Amino acid sequence: MRRVLTIARIVWLEMIRRKDFYVLAIILAALLFMLLTADVFGLGSTPRYLVDSGLLMAWIASSVLAVFLVGRQLPAEERDGTVFPLLAKPISRGQLIVGKWLGGWLACAAATAVFYLLVTAVAVLREWSPDWLTLLQCWTLHVCALAVMSALALAFSTRLTYGAVVTMALVIIGGSIWMLPQVPTLAMYASGLRMDAMLLLYYLLPHFELFDMRRRLVHDWGPVDWTIFARIAAYAALLAALLLVVAWLSYRHKMFRRSELL
Amino acid sequence: MKALEIKGLEVIFRAWRRRAVHAVRGVDLSVEENEVVGFLGPNGAGKTTVIHVLLGFIEPTRGEARVFDRDVRQSIARQRIGYLPEHPQLYRFLTGRELLTYSGRLFGLKGSSLRDAVERMLEFTGLGEAADRKIASYSRGMLQRIGIGQALINDPDLVILDEPTSGLDPLGRLEIRRMIGDLRTRGKTVFFSSHELSEVELVSDRVVILTAGRVVAEGRIEELMPAGKRLEQYFVEVVGASWAREAAGS
Image 1 (tube, rainbow over the protein chains, first blue to last red):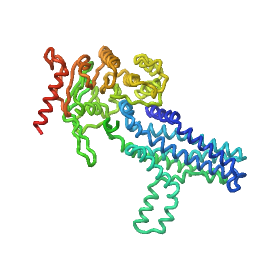
Image 2 (cartoon, rainbow over the protein chains, first blue to last red):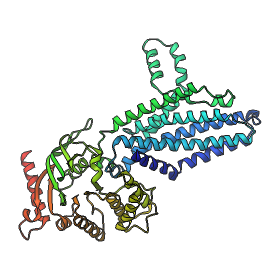
Image 3 (cartoon, chains in turn orange, red):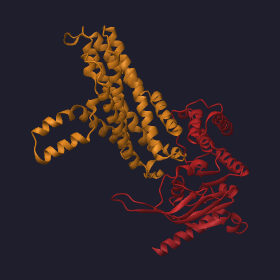
């Protein structure tokens, strides 16, 4: 476990020193400031739209961060040749996979906490009184979704180039969030193989919409029942574990040849 | 116990829609403890492939490789190995001290033994002054030295060096030669590949010459060459004869 944590720590340090996170936080803060000062459609007086827009931006920023940070880990190690001194140490490929995922996920979770704090602070300035328990649940399920997104990006990165990882992961994540909930309705109008394919897609792809509690928070619907909360968290753990196993299976016999990499 | 042992090693690289490349063809090789062995061969002979098999980067198609009697496919086999790649590529966002600490942790070092090992390596590599500077700002020579530091942080019993003098100035080469001598004095085993035959002649107990994935000569330098003959001359003869045989065979 110490070796896994050591690898995770390097991912964390990389995020802090490469400044991607700061750029995203500054963009988020700038957008929030714009929303705070502008009175869009006469909604300026209500903090709800601020929370809704702010959390949507936090979702976008954290998803981008997860895909970019975790997705580049293995391709960058191979491209830069740092994979050689790393794998010459007594670590297994499995430890490397788990360490990279854990570091990336925890870094994204911390960044998301900063984004939430930012949004909450700005909304409180507009006299929003948050339901702290719902807010905590909202953040926790968001972090669960990031665990799956990180594992997805890592699984792709065992065989694809960085550019391909980013494209594939963002298309799947975006599609799952915005398109997947509509698939059952669309399937009702289809038949035969087309309907089967739609339903297969529906059950195969991760359902990120389950982790999105923004509406409960914005409309003061209160916290979700803890049994449901635990089931959604277990769903995330299962999906992340499955994707990590796929990543390990794909990576464990991968050969590294210097002439191919440098 | 042998420091490393390779039996009937074959490596074939296959890629979709590409011709298979037979990189290593039945290599048998062993290195005793406390030996310094130079691993020679022309470009593309398969030296780096053999080294990469020993470190688990590549799985053999056939045959086996063992380090201190452990199969190289087990990660624990690398616990007693220190490895310096040809051009050490290291995390540029870390400082020298952080890189050494990270490497030590991956070898299982902790607490005061880790701190002592890091300080010892900073002193050994002469990078004490630059220890807290980012690796991105290091010169080529400093990179090589921090590379040596990360390879030796665990006080390894077997040190594998892949072209350690490649791209170094004469002073850098002298430092590498001294380091190999120092490792020998401390009872370590050194297995290194190189094109610098004069350097190899000076520091090696034994040489192994590889051509087109096959071992074509192996032995102690004084046994292989009559007095007065230089390793460079012998190398050219052996490799030339091997190529002639290959050409006649095909």
